[in-house]
Image (cartoon, rainbow, N blue to C red; front, side):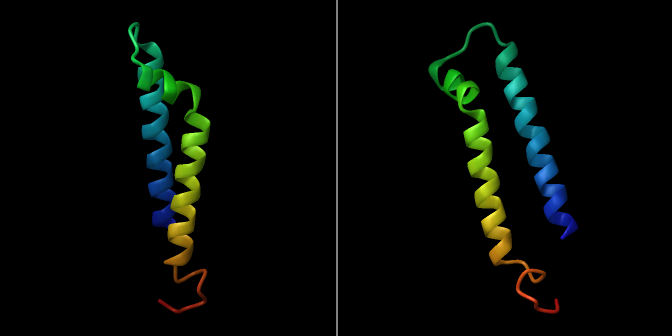
Length: 66
């Protein structure tokens, strides 16, 4: 299960670094404005999909001895 926490941590760090780089740019396009305005929703959906995927494929939650 520790690998799930490591992957989630790396995703969070990468995503927040990307957001801060976009915010510091002087000229932004429409897609970057969309990301800045909706980053909480995007991150929430990514985390939800990540959780569902590993919930279904994890031996810990299936009570199966790996």
